[in-house]
Length: 141
Image 1: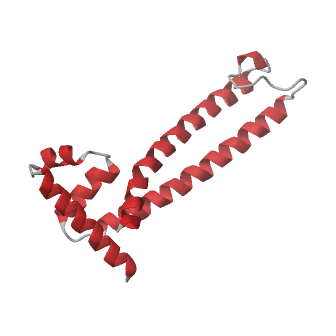
Image 2: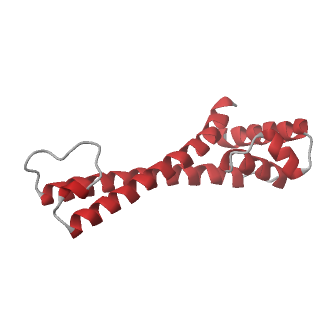
Image 3: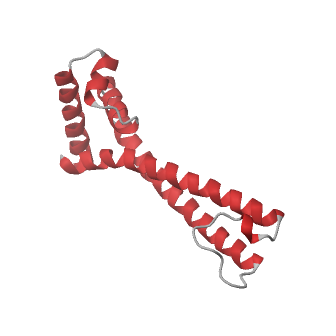
């Protein structure tokens, strides 16, 4: 059961990583715009200063390489998230789907899920346990 639970716990972490990568993409866009508008490298925000004699084309190439890496990583994360969403959708019980979405997609605590659904915390734990078990059984078929 723990393998299935780990898959779901990874979902929230993946979403945070995707947001971080999107922020990096935005920073790259800003840097590329700054470079494109001027060859004055003093306006570029980088963690280290550009190497002596760095040319405009070299910096643009490096920025484009980084952007391509980020796009690839974001696509991989989105694919994993789709797989997790499909596992949730495979549940027949609507309450189980709701609990799993609240817990793993929205990252809510069990206490908050109980308030949202007007259930006891113990009942939410039970629904969660049942959902994990059903997904585990379905995956092993």
